[in-house]
Image 1 (cartoon, rainbow, N blue to C red):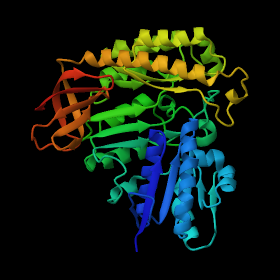
Image 2: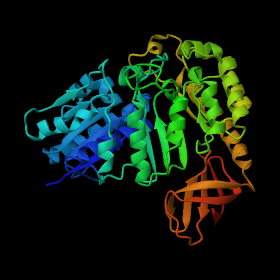
Image 3: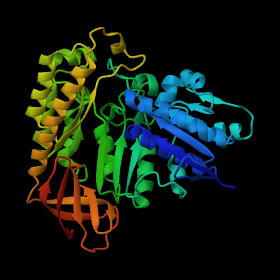
Amino acid sequence: MSKSLYIKTFGCQMNERDSEIIEQLLAQEGYVPADRAEGADVVLINTCSIREKAEQKVFSLLGQLRDEKARNPSLLLGVIGCVAQQEGERIRDRMPHVDLIVGTQQIYRLPEMLARLEQRVTSREIAINLEASFHIPPFQKLLVNASPFPASSGFKRFVTIMQGCNNYCSYCVVPGTRGREISRPMADIIEEVEILASQGVKEITLLGQNVNSYGLTNPVADLTVSFPELLRRVASINGLQRLRFTTSHPKDLSEDLMRCFAEIDILCPHFHLPVQSGSNAVLKRMNRKYTIETYLEKVAGLRRFCPEIALATDIIVGFPGETEEDFQATLELLSLVRFHGSFSFKYSDRPHTHSVNFLDKIPEEVKSRRLLAFQTLQDAIGLERNAECIDKEVEVMLEVCAGDDCKGRTPAHQMVHFNRQGLPLAPGDLVTVKINQAGKHSLKGDIHLKH
């Protein structure tokens, strides 16, 4: 008899990929997808703890699910991922109705833990230990079998190449929630991508907390390649039409990786390179291990190899000790680099990080004012960047249609809206669109078929 599974995912692409892995694992055990928590046999909340807001959402949802658990005592409720790793004991004490608390490295044990709960062998499962000897298991065999879970669009998929981080930025929880950097064997990565390509996947995004250091730390026995070499090997797999990766640390960005944008045809000209601040003083307190001068050298290098590259970044405003002069330096950096887009956030204390102990915290109203100023300038620059595409023909990979109204992304990751004019298109198809309108966050144009 099949069992129903509902997963609610908060946070980043790494969390999305972890949810896919869990769905693949549990599909092998007879689980089928549920589209809502109500009535499901198992509800899992996959969590991010990089920012406080996501963590608050988790506890709010757990509170709401207390009533569902009371109505359906056989429901198995679990918290998995980074918040589970970080707050395991507190979840146990604060939310006694939670049956399962599973950290980032232990998600691969979910089938056996759920089996013990279902068989009443145990009343609660907690697995939050980080192991120095941890390795990422191969998942190719799970991909061969058809899964009932529509975890991601069929034409594009994430593939994990490494996990964890060794950088210890003063504000960041990742080393404590995902452990030290561990690179996945190249053979496993290649085999997984080959299987995905054979199933019709056209776009692959390689994932890691710091993909630039792939193969340099905690290498496994058969891992002898660098990240640029891995990119070239993946790009050679038949059937792939687009290749992306995320995320990169500026200090590890090599010229060899920059050169890939000029030499690998299917590598999309879009690079997410988090800078976090435009002030050297703030970067030093963040323990980022680069200066604005070296960051700008990397930007110049990327544009030398790929003049059309679209750059995106991350920004934290209101870091402890950030002065008005520091913040102005961030605005000046934005004006100088002219990022195509950015993810910007107000600083918030995260547990077990070094910056928690910094005394010179910025008032909330100052952080809010600075964030608004940054985002206002970014929106203006984003609009100008998008306006550069007007009257140009761009390649768009279709993502979804509602009737004839469709949208998809360019290689530079820009969202494009268009009317398919009755053409029999499907997600993953490549079309050419001539752009006639530009907004802050998207483009609009007219289509003709790509030949």
